[in-house]
Image 1 (cartoon, rainbow, N blue to C red):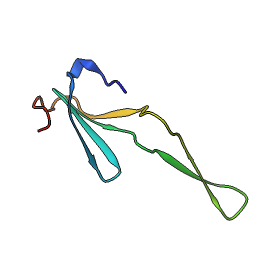
Image 2 (image 1 turned 60 degrees about the horizontal axis):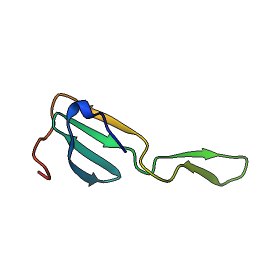
Image 3 (image 1 turned 180 degrees about the vertical axis):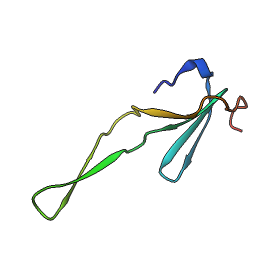
Image 4 (image 1 turned 180 degrees about the horizontal axis):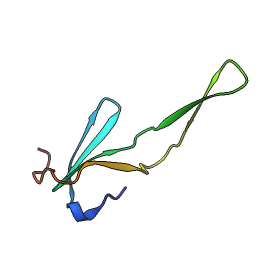
Amino acid sequence: MEVDSQYGPVTNMKAFGDKLFFWQDSALGIASVNDRSLITDNNVSTLTLGTGGILTRYDYVSTNNGSSISND
């Protein structure tokens, strides 16, 4: 997955709970990992929808602060 390079290279990644945080020189973001949606059908069971494969989505928490120190 490639993130927006205007904020610099990815300097660190940390898993916390069910989220994957990444830091760039001037930004902090969260990558979507195993996103799922639960739906109910006409039966008693619940269906789980999701996708597999490579990471496809990320969201920025801040584009004003980051970390330029690798593996800080």
